[in-house]
Image (cartoon, rainbow, N blue to C red):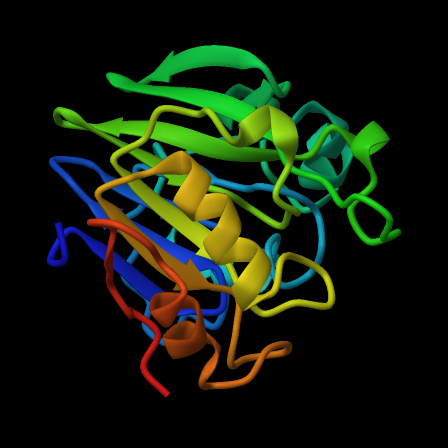
Amino acid sequence: MKDIISINAHSSIRIALDQILYFDPFHITEETHDADIIFITHEHYDHFSPEDILKIVQPDTMFVLPESMKDKAAAAGIPDSSMLTVEPGHSYELKGISFDAVPAYNIGKPYHPKENRWVGYVVSVGIKRVYICGDTDGLPENRKIPCDIVIVPVGGTYTMDASEAAAFVNALKPEIAIPSHYGDIVGAPFDGMDFTRRLKGDIQSRLLIHQ
């Protein structure tokens, strides 16, 4: 899967299948215009960046985003016909891609309130389920999400730190864990390694953010 999944920076994720999926595109350096579906987890500038979206969008690109973001997306020029709005706890299919929207929020911190109903995504990639956590803490209701691969924020402050993320992933028991959301804006360059050394059992780590 290492050639299929890449992290541009921060939480800017690309999955290359027969179709090209982007999650929270940010710090995009090349104009590729190759996105089939763009998934947005929430409205913060480092996750919903119209400037970066313009570099990857093509005429038939579809957008998946929380229901609460519909007006903001429309104001950014995304037509209603190109949007699929989602709510946590529901399953969807778009362009042949099956996925679940799952809760993503903070506990005891104000940055990502539960009432905003922002999301992470669990996407079926062939026979594997890839869980892109979004900006979240290690929520009790998410610790039993079935997944083969998890992409989890580890940078702290606005999300889990490396220790909290490792505890969350150890409960999930995926095959592969990929740390994100560190070394850019928030988190230190060594957070990925710190997270990796805290994993237990047979969980493999992949460090896709290159410092």
